[in-house]
Image (tube, rainbow, N blue to C red):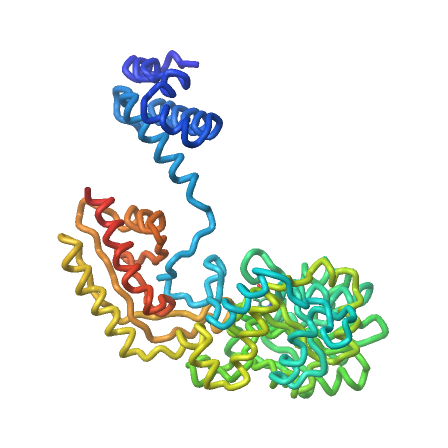
Length: 476
Ligand SMILES: *Cc1c(COP(=O)(O)O)cnc(C)c1O
């Protein structure tokens, strides 16, 4: 379908493109046919020809037509890229410790070993070994969670969104959930609290104002239609200035007086006080239980530093209601998650051990001097390899991420790379993401910045070699 309006040289270039069958005769592709089979190779040839045709038509490709051997090379590159698994380990040089796009918390070695051990064979995920009877799968960790938070009972589901949905469905379906206007949050991925409440069959009763909500606002809203009071940690934003929030203790008294459950979605799930880590104001699960919340909900893969899951701890009567709800089965966690969670929680039995063994806590605790030494060491090596580029170790900021403490940054160190005039930092970032292992950094003011706070020190040499390879592929 050559349009008459295309310049003659473009039309000639389009005519010069080989057919699928002709290109398949290239020796390189004949070899690939033997190794990979007809269908993926033909598919790669078809899509490369399609793309080249488009590039010629849009004037993006150099004329005349690329030689068949070069087109065949492009097909092989495409086949190579497709052969690589899509989900791969990456080096997180974003400076964000809990990056949802990069899988949040890395697991402790103990958790990895426990997950591997139950993956290889069978385990008693729903069998009580003492009695031989069927048991509830959260039982394995319920006792530990009780010990760490002071709660009577606990339940583990797929994630905190699931725990929240299940709590709403089991405790308040067909009734009202009372939430402060200041807590009707939206977090990543379009997760909006008002929609969560209605999606699970309850009605939202918003009270107070954006900046001020008092105990009386909740109390005035309670009537026979009330299913629960829900307090939500604002996570990724902050209401500051002329503000007021009731103390959880006071709200708990009102909830108890009216026999309405008080549910606290604390979000990131700090099992210990994070103030010594430079994270003041992050709610601690145990404090919330102590203050009288009937149910506390949180994620397993945020500040807790474990596998993805959602945890509900609190009154036995409420947890059992959730366990009996049909949705519970749809949200259940697998044995691998439970094993990793159990091993992570075991580390918290001694907070000092947790600080040394849970990677997230270790990263939060990393001495600034050590980050600086690593940044300067890497910058020094890179300056030697990346000729013509400006490489510097910079004093930088890192973030906890995962909705925890959005405005508070951690003092950190990074390596900043400024390409020579011929290359762009954008193109370099792309090469780095395509590398082995891929490295994800951040762009800032014409530079690519590699933050070291979320890079394990053992990954430094891999980071170095990935950066050098990406530089070679760009500069060659
Ligand atoms: C992160 C977060 C959630 C969602 O947790 P997931 O484990 O990602 O489902 C819900 N509520 C709050 C307050 C959060 O911070």
